Every structure is written in C-alpha cells, then in structure tokens.
Length: 146
Image (cartoon, rainbow, N blue to C red; front, side, top):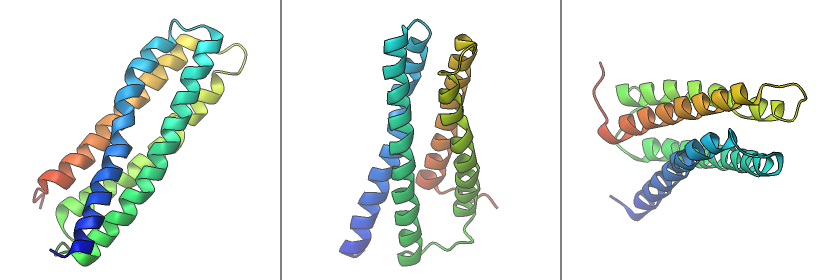
C-alpha cells in the first residue's frame, strides 16, 4: 500500500470521526434545551448550528477521500457495500438539509411549541446518528450484500 493511499485513508477515517462524533454531544444538549432559559437556549442552538456545519464540511472531505480511495484501491463502484453506502449517504444528505436548520429557525418564531421542537430535534439527531452508524458499519465490515 503506497504512502499516498495511507494518507488519504487517514484523512477518510478522520473525517468520518468528525462526521459522527459531534452528534454524541448533541443528544444531551438537546435534552438540556427543554429546561433552558432563552439565553442558554440560544447558546445551545448555536452549538447545534455550528455542529451541523462542521459535520457538513467533514462530510465533504469524507466523500472526496472516499472517491479517491475507490479510484486508487481495488474496490469498484459496483461493490455492494459501496452502492449501499452511497444510497444511505444520498438519503442522509437530504435528511441533514431538512432535519436541523429549519427546526432551529422555528425556535425564534413566536408561538412555537418549544417542547415539540426539542422533541423533533432529538428525534432528528438520533435518526441521523443511526444513518451515520449504518454507513460506518458498511465501510468497516464491507459486507457482501448481493
């Protein structure tokens, strides 16, 4: 395995960590939103927005490095675990775009049910975390699905 491939693999693993890891922090923060005052709630929501932004950018690096690894390695685009990972990834892109920022914007609108918004954020966080873990499983285990 040449050194360039190893460097790209390291970047790929690091970006996977940055894509998944922050969601572990968001789960307890979401639960704290329920009892937070307005100032603290704004701080928690800012953490959410910055975290989602970090995850998006780490995801770009993850995809780019993944493409390079496939091009340089012995895997093909027709490999079942790669196709399944890509399908989950494209689904997660649409999910990420609709799951967090629109809900966070609603926190600032008058008359919104804060408890319901917190529940939506918590549900979205868990669903996205599960999607990411499924993609991670596919990349690590590399199962032959068909």
